Image (cartoon, rainbow, N blue to C red; front, side, top):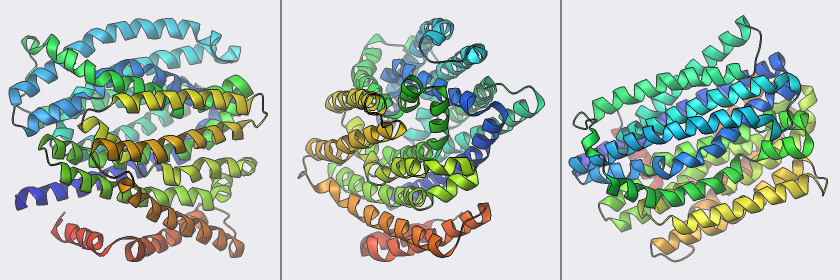
Length: 510
């Protein structure tokens, strides 16, 4: 048991390290790519890149009913040493996704033809947007089918394999996009094409590593079972419904900006949103690191360990996220000035508001994996979609009729996400695990304290030191980060948590 636990700890460190490296790569690529694309295609045209991606994300809800739960069922079968059952889940998903992909293909063709009737698109960009929709649609189909291959690293808690593939994906995508934009006449769909080419490579690598990790799992149509499909769908349908709500939180900002404020404002907002969206991506990455252990504890019916581990995950997740979120708040104006140019500095408070509420709303994201582990997805799904609809309606109302513009969209997102993540998620997690209502709030407060320290320190430095370039910005960021890490380690972690970290790094050998 001790050896197993040690290997599990090492895998967590591996998973977290590779996840953070992948995220760092994403930041570096976005730092370069966003201003580069804007300079090549213009702010208005740039807005349609994330807009088409968000539109495709909305359509991805059609795939979530299966893709969101296959890792859970496959992992439980593997952890219980029931490999024949795992093979049935694998083949049931694989053949079902192939069949449904044909339907999705027709949907994307119809949407690409009629896209100009849904959004405000200049005549000169209509054909580009249509091509973008088709390419992104093909990528979604490929990602949908490939989800079953990602279940192998998840099931053995080797997420660093998946994250490593994602890192390669990010690098290849940047290289292809840069090549297309510099060697050919700039088109917005080059970004989608670069993403698709990188996605093909990731799909192939996913298959390769699946074969290495699960050599006994074979493709066999005879293992397709309707009862397994029904089991997956009955669990995943609530994830699918919940995903609609998630997208109403995450994917409607630019769509609403385009409809209520026009293409140009949507383009500006799309650029400003890059860092908050990256922060949300980081939250998903770090929360996902804890998911395999949460599911494994449940598979082994070790509820006490699941509760203890989940509660600690909330605190660690919050401490990791508080630093970049608070840096965005404290250095927001300088970041926009150095990154996108002085004309964007006027949107400083737009960035600050987008980042600040994420400090205390993203900490609890590991708790979402409890719902999947215990297969209690109905109420979270209904709550998410209800609040998502409120977010959509409130964003339209505040940005349009009330006249708050882009700030109305931010206020709407902040208000509704606070309701969902700070009230519903901790309370329902306590309910399904049989704990007192306040048990999962313990890990939220320390990150909030740390974030305030970062914001105050960052703003104070700028009273004495003017940030004029990337070197200045990076230097200040490093100084503040070191102070935050020391402050958190000494004052925000318990003695037991410090010992755990020390033991992890003592036992962990590269």
